[in-house]
Image (cartoon, rainbow, N blue to C red; front, side):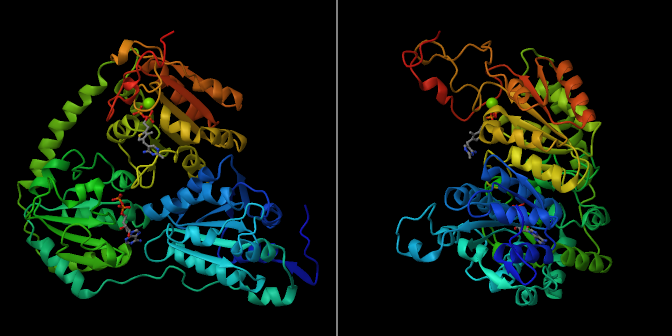
Length: 567
Ligand SMILES: Nc1ncnc2c1ncn2[C@@H]1O[C@H](COP(=O)(O)OP(=O)(O)O)[C@@H](O)[C@H]1O
Ligand SMILES: Cc1ncc(Cc2csc(CCOP(=O)(O)OP(=O)(O)O)c2C)c(N)n1
Ligand SMILES: [Mg+2]
């Protein structure tokens, strides 16, 4: 597979490779085939890492995670039609979650697409992508490749980050151009993600409101984690002395056990806070869209880069529109000019109530039940994760997501990647690979067994690239707890001692992983400790009781026994 380019002539594939290097791309995730295989080889030959996956959705989740963790857009490469569509779910999810990523897909030549003449893998990809992603462009001519790459790069990283689609046609990839003319089109763009400075007026308005607050709270969202201004966030919290709450992917910006953490006091600050500071956090469903328990008299200060985010669900009394670094800098600079009037009992109240709640919460880990529940399994996992704070945690499921989020304190920023704003399943294996590749750190993915099912075949990708990824599967027999179980007669509740039949460790054996099958907390603690220390690709099947966890509806119970005769 050599590049067909010659001393005097180059192909569109070569130009695309050079253009990606000009904007600092050194890694691509994807699944090759017609018409992008040759391009991937050329890119590899020019020093761009390429990680081949089993499904484009997981390659896209890896690219999105890469973007969130590095602020350089992750690149997803797919073939046309279904490969493009498989990847589009990840690019759309990245757009919803504000992760910067670029999906590059080969596409058919235009005339037979536009005339619907039935071409190989023909699909009008650009127009299908447009409504779902932050921006979408098509390149038809080799001389436009650099422009197309700069457009998608800027769209992915500037303003609110998001997923962007770049469509490049087969004729363009294969087009031949004079080398000198092609080189003349290449350049490194200037200032691709400029600061967005908030107005002084907006900062003064926010500081006045903050200074008047009796029971303020600071909510840190994944935008604050993404901004990579960790010391400034810490300084803002500690110099104001205001309690803070971290959304799931902001956990670790300050340690979850920080004395100002209101992590266990969500209801209290929702009901009582008179001023709420949203820092890179949307007032969306994850925060009851600002209604329900929220104090109706509460006033909101919102720091966000997206002006259209303001007032989406509640009036924002003091919007500060700008990039978080510029906004936090401005507020820190103004702080000495203001005297805060926080109720001196507010922080002691938060701290004393947190202590009581945390002590009560710890009771959940006492029962070392066998068969295990999520909580008895987490009693072991939390111990091992506390000893390995620099391991990145990937997490998805229902009970597995909620319980793990509450059970495992994060000590470092950008060390927790989960199903986030859209709460989709199937981000696990791609995110684990993307996190390991982007950071060279070890990764532990705590997966519900149903959630694992969406991306499980790409566990083999982690094995193939020998990544230090340990997948821990909380196996309670399927979606929530029980679909597909051989249930009691006439839909009666299933007996709680049903053995869970699946053995995911054997799947790991098939791909050469270091695997474990554990049924007790002690076995799990030993296995996870060993797996992380090994820095190998590992899989731990954690057998839980079939009825562990709660679900929104025992839909498996609706099946009459006659449909599924109990064997
Ligand atoms: N660099 C940045 N500066 C300011 N705001 C940002 C930046 N990056 C992302 N954001 C904003 O952060 C917010 C992230 O919100 P969200 O994804 O709901 O986080 P969470 O679910 O953790 O609360 C988005 O509104 C986005 O516009
Ligand atoms: C793309 C998509 N399809 C389906 C669903 C609906 C769902 C929400 S949670 C979940 C899996 C829960 O079972 P799991 O075994 O993972 O966890 P546990 O509670 O510990 O047993 C599903 C299928 C979502 N959210 N996204
Ligand atoms: Mg399950």
